[in-house]
Image (cartoon, rainbow, N blue to C red):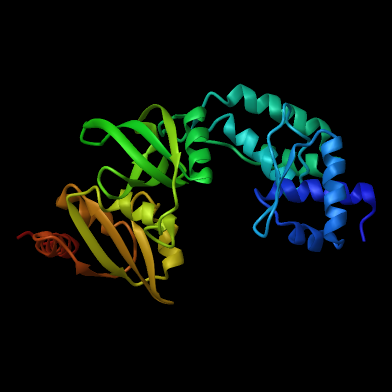
Amino acid sequence: MYGTSERLLRLLSLLQARRDWPGPDLAERLSVDVRTVRRDVERLRGLGYPVHATPGVAGGYRLGAGAALPPLLLDDDEAVAVAVGLRTAANGTVSGIEETSVRALAKLEQVLPARLRHRVSALQTGTLTLGSGGPVVDAEVLTVIAAACRDHERLRFTYGTHAGDVGERNVEPLRMVHTGRRWYLVAYDLGREDWRTFRVDRVDGVPAPGFRFTPREPPAADLAAYVSRAISTAPYAHQVVVRVAVPASVLAERVPPTAGVVEPVDEHSCRLRTGAHNLDAVPFYLAQWDYDFVVEEAPPGLVERLTRIAERFSRAAAGSAP
């Protein structure tokens, strides 16, 4: 059973962890009755926290935005994650937040317990960051898109395609996916009446939020795999599917999500879906791994190329000329 002060801190932590909380759920988490939750909410309001209440069966509590940012309650792992994230942001693919990240990190490290400061310091001294070489995205653009995904608000923005076409898009955003080098937005394109994957660095300016919408059924259960397929195979003129004699976990370490989609077949083999603009490059791409493979789907001409190159290498190994 929590004491009053401890219970208030616990209640504040719960309100910060989730957008909406039914009263009975909070009461169960705090091991009190609903009336005690109401009294504790009033105490938080008296301390300046804007806790909003919605009556009715579907009602509950929500921590709103106030005039100032309230204290955030973080457990040990969350505090370390935030500190590491702020350090990474200084050299990341989001522009305009480097200095802000350093200031926020200074405040956080000032109040970190010694045991956590040691963990953060160990991660910092033991890690080097290489430049990603990827395009930099404005932090405000990411913030607006993330908020629209969370609140189910339509977005309108100017977008430039890989082919150089520029036009207005009106979309229902679902989720953003980060590949490590680029940010992608999965959204339903109202103009094209289909799901699309947008590179966020190709969005011109800050998107304009619009009306709220009812979320549609997602295009796939695994959105990360969906984006990987969209950016590693769909943009290319030639699609290739091979079955590789190695577990999916092993091949996935060699194939980034931007280069192909790795699907497990069984414990000893997997399927790779990839694409290319030039068929001549495919044999050498497949030859870089020391794994046997079988071509399951290929564009016209690929099998002949593989056969011709295999014969050439065989003659080279035998020391003979054609």
